[in-house]
Length: 134
Image (cartoon, rainbow, N blue to C red; front, side):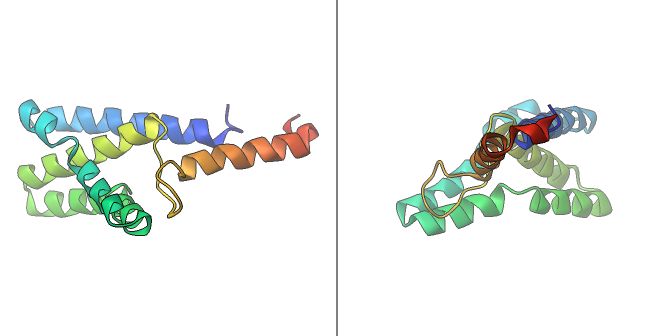
């Protein structure tokens, strides 16, 4: 299992999703807000209507952990539950995406993702030299 990066990335996403839900509950945020705001990062897919390059750049911008974790730090420093709840919703969205196998996009076509390429690289290495697995 640990030799399959795609599986590890999915497990990591599932943990981020679960922890986001736990912390969201812990701060007492409203669940209806969570439900309404959960898909907001996917609005950035609209960039694909202009071009694949712009769509992948916008999608990746809001589907990396860096910005929401930075927002967690800012909201903790400012003691803002509103910002924290937004950051946790954002993290939950990304985590669930990763757990489901949706990765960051390459500027080729929508389904060309980093998770897809990780799985292809591992499969290629295994086919080339299966003795490395033992």
